[in-house]
Length: 633
Image (cartoon, rainbow, N blue to C red; front, side, top):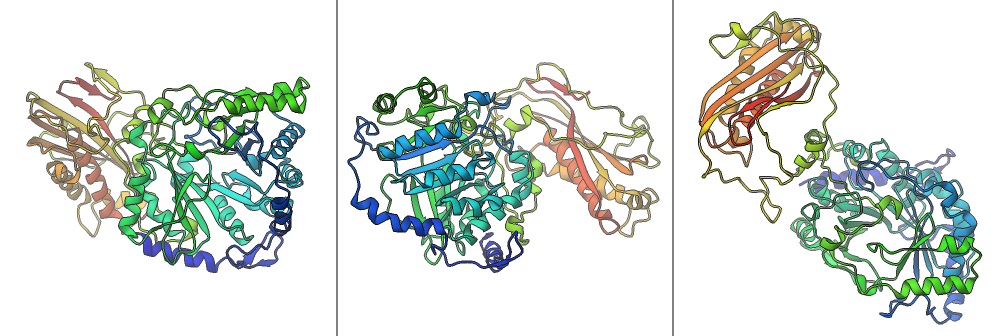
């Protein structure tokens, strides 16, 4: 397990917390929970007064089921400084014109009205709330509202370290930071921007300034980050964090699929296998989270179970969108515009009647995960920022990302992406940085086929074009290696007829000038790299079913592996051809053969140069089978 390296990593992080702040003055780690900030001290002085002068709770904010809504979430903006794939549709989201968004004064007017009626907690959301220029002033103005106990913010953390000292001074009392991965490269893939270390700095700054706990929101999605559960939990050993695992929820444009949802119970079972002593904490009133703590750990973990075990019966939340619409349920599609009534000159009494009518229409619970996924609702970016995955999984190359969460080496890679990557590959491609072949022909050519003269030319150069299809080459939205429960399953090919199957795959190894010359002249100390790689490719094709778990064993009739040298790019181009007669194809055998031959060539040359790139592993053609033939042009 990766727990021990993470523990050591965290110890280093905590020790490193004595460092210079932006002003150059040293800062030290306060004791967790220590109310060092002026805002918290001021709030503690006000609490006795608030308790003594509490008023009856507003009937306007009480629904027909007796739920008192004392928690208001206000979206400050629809804009965000990240471009996440999970909180907006693929085609993007048309933003509301600035003139139709709430002004600062309108936000404060509505906040004053809600606080007067009994709201004692306001959370600022987005988009990304910390990109709003006057966010510090808004917090300061809210802090002056008598009766308001908590002012929180949910942020992606990019700007947090820079703004937090001013926000704390203004009165910010609670912080939620959204973070779905501890792998920097995966973070960049998800959000399409750099910034992982800025988020880490924001978390560090929040701890440094005495916020306890600092809540970290992690939406868990099968095929993307469920393998990082234990790494996130380990963060709570030495840091005052509340890691909040959130079940993946459906919103317009994120193409929700219940198979990608990792349930609370599944997450809990995974964590308990590592830490059986995990203990449940008492649930707070109206809390959305089920909280747990590992004895001896400083922080805690929580689960927000919106899908598998809803908490609608105790819901006390209302939402105002950036364009001024009131939503009484996050998953509801009904909204009422407070902005329009406010700008039309509605009095306070008239606004309260409108709010009360909306709250009165609130249903006892949301429609359930399967019904919600079919309902029309705003994309999450237009409600508030929540890290939810769009219908995509990371490319296979993510499985070799080196993990260095919180800037510390030594965390063993444990990435295990599910077969649902196929939904990503169908609509996306991995960017290629090199043309497939240069114009120069090779000076050495090896082939396992006896008649190699016909194959002695370079593979066709040219720009990439989409694959050409001869025959139906049927595709499906349903994965064939997943059963009805979403678990991995081997395909039953017992009833399929035997046909002649042929597949060709290729790979490219960029060797660099030094290694290329030694391979070209057959002067490597390890021996003839091309011959060894060729043999490795043949052997790999024959044992593919032992390497790929759900791949059928195929009795191959023939395997041919060719390696050609391209002097223009100092590259070796590998082509593997597999042939068999049977009920299933041999594309996996061809791909495995090409990939292993490429890796073997890397191994033969790595003593000479570590600047070797293995890439462009792809299927060139496939013939035979019910789905027809495939030929990449």
